[in-house]
Image 1 (tube, rainbow, N blue to C red):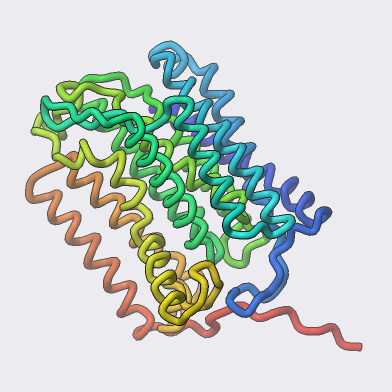
Image 2 (tube, helix red, strand yellow):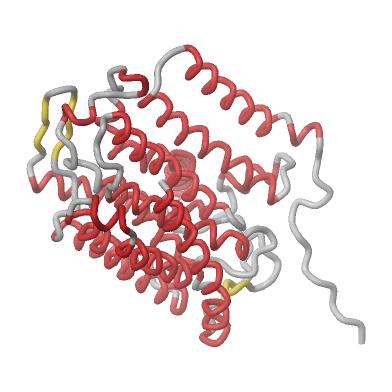
Length: 384
């Protein structure tokens, strides 16, 4: 655990420091988010936060390779697969940088996302088989490749859609990465397997990069991650779950907490977790497509009716709206991990308490305590 904490801290520190460099590059190259009707920021904000996050991920990977436990107790494929995901992340980050600079069209970005996901498949980082108790379900390689590309592209675009308020996307993905790290670490510990796994390593790196970026991105933001960041962390989140599939035999991960039989969710989590963690932004994505197509517009046309916009409308401030969506992400991700690993009354009590608190803060808090300002106002014009 200590080495994972160190990897997390390295990713956070390097990302935090590199954001200053990324902001300067964005200002010099003109990669700046202009104020549009659908935006909630009132002044131009630099992009390219993804470059700092990529630097944090690379720094954490380099340090992890030198740590005694991770470098000696892990199998060879752990760092090999993590390196493949890092290269795919650099590729999709580069595509995002081009979009931040030149505003690529949607089909070009989609093509770049498919290429990055395809690179994972060509390097055998894909869904291979799933297990249930002592039975293995082997997937046809072509089907596994298609499922991998679909999950990666869907997660990348879901993160991109949710990146609408300061700190929202980075916080949601950080919560998801921490939840998946807890799952990877606990399922191996419960079953007396090596806790040095690719999924745990990638999740610790990703959570650290998001934490390091948040101080610069929380409202009022000084830097946006842009598509370079949202697509990068979306790929990392989905790939960390994909690397777990096929890593263990069914009998090796058959136990949950206290030696109980692990839930069927253990089998399905490599597919469900990236989608479950992002169920709120993915629901937002589906609703946006339906809303726009019903209005006779392109599903890629922008509007100001996303879920975070609705939270602002019912009375939440920007920071409170972000906190609410973080809580929904924690409820879904944490709930899935709890149900998959634990059983009994206390698990259900914890899940019910989390659900009640999240619902109350979402719908009751704006009635009890309305914010003085929903959006930050632009600085006043200097007097002549």
